Image 1 (cartoon, protein in one colour):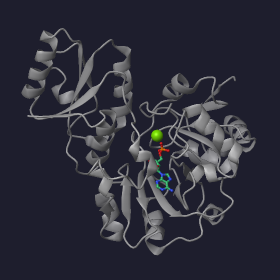
Image 2 (tube, protein in one colour):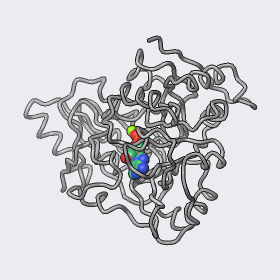
Image 3 (cartoon, helix red, strand yellow):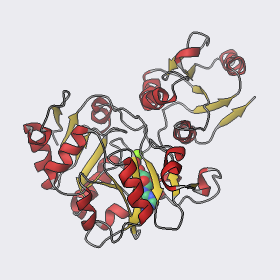
Length: 346
Ligand code: AMP
Ligand code: MG
């Protein structure tokens, strides 16, 4: 299949009337899948009401069918076709964080493709804030199911090039809207119980959520890998670069010692650090991921850096670790998954 590329790099007013957006929206309505930018990462969208369309997402990504998809909407009125009720805490969170990087789990309504929810009786819903995403969703005029637009297991895409590299020939097209802003996926929060539960940390921090709805808890599985996650997708390996990744908790001297030992054993080694320490390390490849003093820049560049390591012939990657405060929680969650839970402590 030919994968079309549309460039909408310079957002203008009335984007949904743009011919590129109109063409992509028509393909969505026709049951095709389309890559598009959101403020978190690039999404791979399909009509959420159509089993056939949604099935194409799973095929293109190689995604396990028990991993449900997030439904994207442009207007709150669209909730009526997707969910049976919106509890007060969910309403408050929508008012505070939509459009934006927050996915809310609610009881699902019949009519939605059951492939979207992987058989669960709940559905995750989000209103993205990226102007191109909103324009596409408005023009398509259907709720759009969209996971990240990468092959399953690979780092999520933060540029249209990443999408093209992974899915060329497998999808109808991708809209290029430049590099995404947040860089990690949305926060997934379950609002079907008495207290909101974070199932996946992401672009909206726990601290921000608590300012709006009081106490918010983390799903137990986020701290203990032996507990089965409430969010089916959280059990899979994700975001992994080709070479094994190990997270080092300790000083930069400790990390360099590990690299030295590996080098003595004849290994080729990559180091994942930030701008502050880039010139300190001596290894085969040293890549900086934003600036440590601005963790949002680390989140923004994380997936691109994980992908860039694949351009080098290396045997292992050692990464610095980050504080779990604020957006650091999402960064460490993604790094931990990318490493398959491999840690070295000083
Ligand atoms: P992705 O689409 O790659 O951003 O992944 C979506 C994430 O949301 C996965 O971790 C899913 O397991 C999670 N998710 C989607 N829908 C639900 C739901 N109804 N209940 C719990 N988790 C969900
Ligand atoms: Mg994903």
